[in-house]
Image 1 (tube, rainbow, N blue to C red):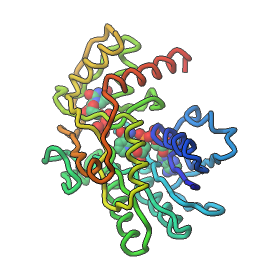
Image 2 (tube, protein in one colour):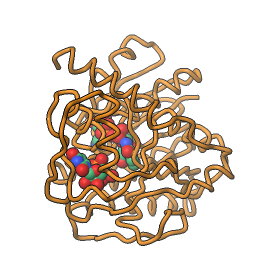
Image 3 (cartoon, protein in one colour):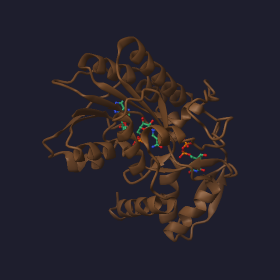
Length: 313
Ligand code: NAD
Ligand code: UDP
């Protein structure tokens, strides 16, 4: 298998590249490092079966030789980045998706889209199943991400239906693990960093909003099962372990053994209040079910952030 992974230097992308190498695939990593980290792929630099190309996927690109599959993961994913680099976020969901699909059409390759639970917006249905169309503010601060991903899904199924491209669409719910950026701004790195430094954990709003945290290994397993299936509709990948952000803050304090306190900050605008996937489709079609408990995933992730902080970076 020869695979292209856009966003391959990011948190999930770099784990996917490692997984694909474990399957014996040749991999071309395409990343502009806007939120990626060179250390995530440092171990791949001398691998003769991995090519690393610094490129912004929202500008056209070609690849020499055959390509079997394009995994499109390139996009900033932290709400903190939606305010910092909104145009880049829009371009990653729109132009970059087009460019990947054009490449797939030229090469006869399968297209995998890393979509998101954000397509459901601030949902009015719980849990969220793939048949729910969502509740999205198209002019709010999250619109650059949510609408670009919704567009990415639309353009994917259009290439599927009108150009014959094979597509696989996974909607990831909050996914965490080692290799996230320390200063990424998402809740998992924020809370762990704050707890390890003995700083107060910043809970936005009253902390009663919920999330369901999936571990990266389970999500990579789901991606692999999906691309090895022939299923061309969206599939949720996440976990049933739903908890409030306040409860999650306490879980991080306890898992790190920190003395940190909790401070409440203003609530984020349009912050989804309840997020909990219905994963029965993935279970039924892919025979997939997440295996990692929050306790186990947190332990590994905390170890990672501890080593990053100890290294002084
Ligand atoms: P990340 O920020 O760690 O990784 C994104 C990678 O994409 C980075 O390496 C970045 O440099 C690269 N990138 C961004 N724009 C690019 C462009 N135009 N051209 C080339 N490279 C570009 O984030 P992540 O959490 O690993 O997310 C990976 C993908 O999964 C994203 O598409 C994201 O929307 C999706 N996703 C993630 C989660 C999650 O909770 N982690 C949830 C839902 C969806
Ligand atoms: N959050 C928080 N403190 C932080 C970062 C995030 O309370 O330091 C909250 C945020 O308001 C949201 C949840 O944690 O309710 C998850 O936020 P994240 O940025 O990880 O991603 P989201 O799920 O909103 O895309």
